[in-house]
Image (cartoon, rainbow, N blue to C red; front, top):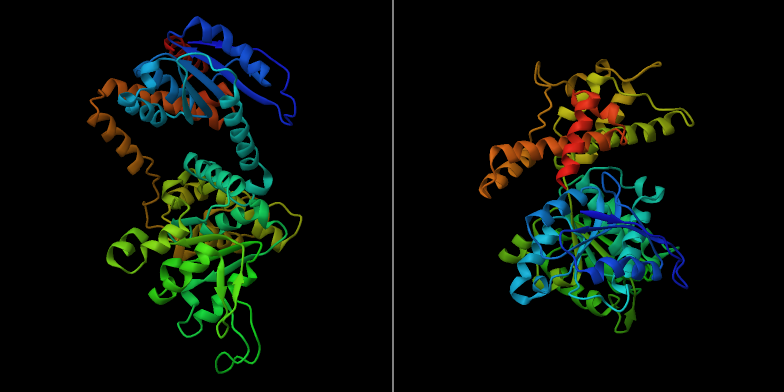
Length: 475
């Protein structure tokens, strides 16, 4: 594998410089190998050598897709967004479509098939511009302060949310367990929606809607429309005009109301209760549910025609047990917020190692909301300087004696090994892959500091350097 690096001027009218690393894997034709850097430079894409380990945005160019290419993609895409460019014509053939899916499953963000050089680099520049804009927003304080977490599954979700919120006006359906941050994601979508700036997000909790008043709650009513309607009233559809309507727990809507909502969601037209005049409303719809709407459609409790109107784009908020790497960052975030309320301007206390272990080992049936409650209880009991200690843990939160053991070998770990064995991967290769992953993660956790990474891994600096060098030589 070789890397190319060359700088070039930005394209006319391009406000943000596009930057990426470029590498070639295996046999690539001379026309593309020699002409691609210059073509990318003319498009205003600043090229640099692939960093070690790979990060940022990159282009990986190869001939036919094989196991070597897929291995390189898996390695490069751990911490980088990679655009794969296949130069063998057979990769793009209809009969070879599974190859393209294999490339995506190996970590590529997208795949271009170039049997010969294109006229320009517009395909590449458009993708890089979109990905860089999404990443810049995902990394911005306004997003990171709202959606806290650095686990891969959480950051991938945040990038998806940022992209759909900023570059589309699609309706969004968020599903996930209670306490996983569905309303926070809805608020981020509202804040990033270009057409919703300066407006408030209208929130309707569908679990509190009574059958008798549901029409008025959503559609509004005219004066005298029913007993007690002394004045005309706007409903949620009118209040959300020009902004975002968030329907929380939409799976709880009764069937008659589901039918009434079809037209307004499809055509953005509705009538107030007691009126014959059609009203127009323009809003972005975001819905959330902790119910299985697929099962609801199967048993008839949720209308399929409503589902397809609300699910222009769907996302799943992972439970905390699937993002355990975020437990301590979230706990520290909640401690800082609670401390700011209690003593503005003061720094929050740290966490004693035993408390950190306790938080990591604890189950969170209420997910992030449960963790926030625990963190705030710890702070309420803490007094004086120094970190929060085990004595600050309320007695009713104590684990059973001898039960605090962090089981890092979770279902995901076992599932990955099972998948490897089903594919015929041997014990040596599984062990090597686990070791490589541990080395890379340790280096990432220590900010690329090899000495601290070696200490975390329990090996010498030289052993870590030799291992990295041997793996690089195999690339």
